[in-house]
Length: 342
Image (cartoon, rainbow, N blue to C red; front, side, top):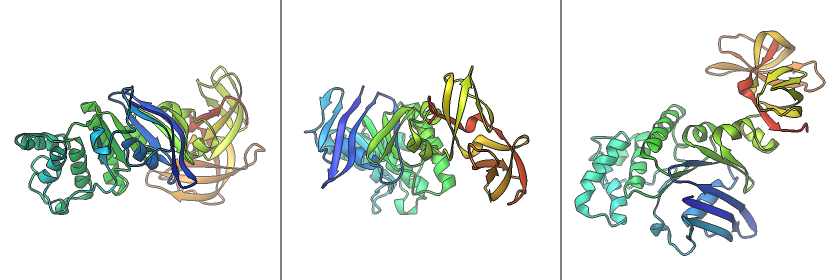
């Protein structure tokens, strides 16, 4: 393992912002620290960089303790939410700053800057003033500057959160492609699930300063460790059921879940876990919210297991409060929260 974090705790006075955090990051892997605001993810990242002293625990690289290694000698590249570019310098000078800080000979700067601008999709922007860049372009320059000295670890702290939704989505796709093509080892901090799942190979979900679950993206999404993680990952309804042969029978119908162990189970339904259909559990719409690509519904059911559920309908639907509907399960919106009924 390249990066190892063991039992790291960070205090602000008597308050423990991070408690006993442990994780590993292998060469070429991207790990996302995912959690709501105030969960401790940025504090943990700062402790790893050396910007925040740890009260307890060890941060090491290839087995070497980094406690006595200053920030600028750890070989890490950092990209923050606002990019922190120098407004009085052009794009090339901003990127070259990273090279100069790491002692790269000046004769090598121009070639490396050209390579990096091509890597981040900004060829020809060398002399552009950073004040003339869009938000997405500025973050690309910040990324190029962080990558300039070829860091052994790239740390990204909410790098896309200051951008509008459409630009954030496109830049996330481009960044994911760049990280994988370049085989860059990276640690990402974000509160955005889509961003984490687009960029990362694995995620560590934090809540109240603790890592509640860590694992491959698909595994965490399908098997949240507890109710808190499940709710953060979009579960709005919990439903008991009984599994047999990969089929879970519940009061809302049958759900095909190959990973469900035979016996009592507990499911977590995301809003798209139930969809309006011609056949299924009957209910009555109590609220409808029109989104870009679907209609999100709140539906009252006549079942003892759950009284109301979230569901979705096609964007073209004209459903309103009081309308009758039938709901059918969609396996893509269902998580197995635990192996035992809660």
